[in-house]
Image (cartoon, rainbow, N blue to C red; front, side, top):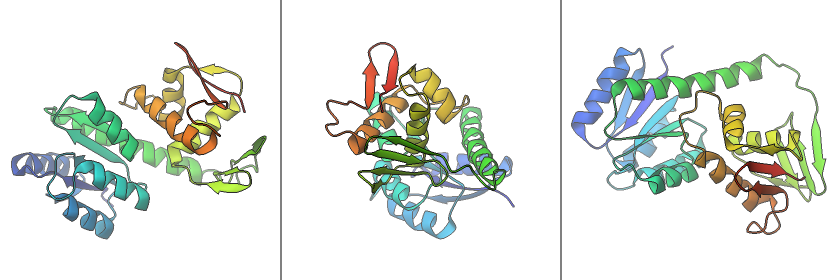
Length: 234
């Protein structure tokens, strides 16, 4: 079965170009031209990946990404017309998996799409190849990580983490006391083919601090080591 890609782009010429080129790559392509239509189409068709422009009528790409991320784990590649760091950071904060700045080459977009879909496929294969994961639980005071169930508890109350937040926290916990660079965290948590910047790590660390630190502005568990990276203190 062909993998389904939803393109959300209000510029007709670019939308048609994306549809044509991704279809030639063997994908089943559907499209929407505004934010409201994007939500309706994504909910109805359940695509394998979404290419999402930021500047859209009715609802912008940031809001569409935020809403979809609460409803599904589909990978989202955001398109921005400005080479602005704040756009990229906001996109990541809303839950985007990757971003691409206009103008871009079609070959670059195809490579990003392929990499995102490959990562999802490998994650699924890893899960299916391990029928009985070990019951592994990490405890750090009032914080508990249940690896097999992919659940985190603080004071025995469940904390809702995004998949990559859990993966990052687990990797840090498995290397308690060690200083881990942003590049190392990117490689081991996001994969060597991830095209995003090290700011991705900073954003996810901030999210985790807001959920597990008593005072996020003065972290005691996820400590910043200036010029080196992060260290998990437990």
